[in-house]
Amino acid sequence: MKKTKKIVIWMGVAIAIATGVFYGYQRFFSSSPEPSETTRLSSLQMRKTDNLGTVKVKRGDIVVTISSFGHVRANREVTLRFRTSGIVKKIEVKEGERVKKGQVLAMLDSPSQQAQLLQAKNNYEEAKLEGIKSKIEEKRLSYEAAYEDYEKTLIKAPCDGEITDIAVYEGDSVSSSTPIISLINRDKMYVDVDVDEVDIRKVAPGQEALVKFDAYPGLTLPAEVSKISPTAKSQGAVTVVKVTLELKEFDERIKPGFSTEAEIMVGKAENVLIIPIEAVVERQNRSFVTVITEDKPQVRPIMTGISNGEYVQVLSGLKEGEEIVANNYKLMEQFQKMAEVKGMGAIREMQMMRRIQRPPAGAGKVEYYKVKYK
Image (cartoon, rainbow, N blue to C red; front, side, top):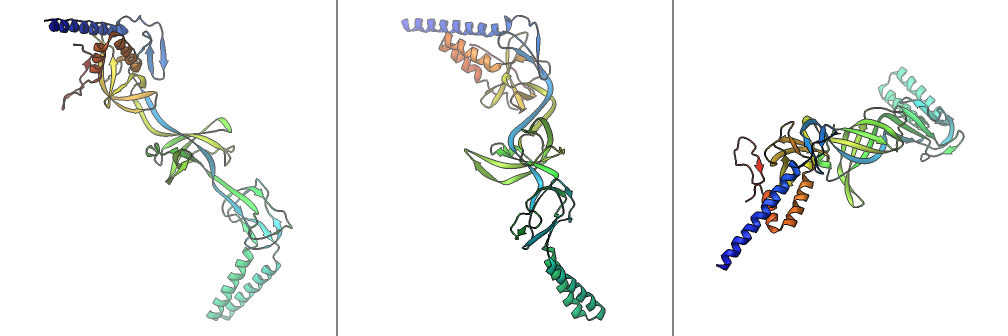
């Protein structure tokens, strides 16, 4: 008999606690004063209700990016040398001068090579007049060999570009290993960045990017992913993959070697339903929001799309204009505190709310779930 009385008493206490928590939960929504101002958050508008806030589901754009750091690289940078030893006879260009492919940039003093070339050319012409095929072929090869020796005394531009450095003076004695002239081609400019291995699966050639430069904080240039390295490398405690971005606009101020910060766009959704990411609570690999209704607050399952860390795309479960709790995590924290104050019975109710079951298989519409107390 005593045992039965104790059970009845404890059941009454549990019901009282659950009832108190339920009305406490309702007060978060029903006792809030009417808002006096609207604060604009990007494409969403948030209304202050106590310290939770509510937000109406709106349409907007979401752009997902990956940040990475790197350096500028020119299309081509070369250091040119003579292919033989000798005395520098002439430097034909100056630093900063733009040159064309094949243009002679410098030459050695080469009287012997020039004499051999002239003799070989004359012999070749004489053989062609004689008309003996074997002799013509012999003299042609001799002429080509002499021309090759003479070419070694010249430096020609391998591509269009700009002279960035001249390392010698006329009259200097040089060898085939002496750097003579540096040339850069800036027809295309690239940015090599290191992307963390956990993000590289999101990156693909052709994706758009924006590049900022430490040297010019106000300058941002568009770029495009042009190449992804087939290998990864360790960089301190992380593993990264080199990604090459091609700048789509030329700016004379940009120099090879400049430090950069790039934002690679790896996801984009336009004119979609979006809500603050704080409005979504994850439970058992499912997403939930708390919807404000005239009847009671509703815990509703939703399907989410991409997120930029601030806002998340809503694929289903909400309609444009519906009002939800803006900071659902904070609501859960406050509800948890109430549960701790009220006792273990309320905690069980909290746990029950978290274990909302999936909608029945094959259901034709999204079902809404209210918080219930037994």
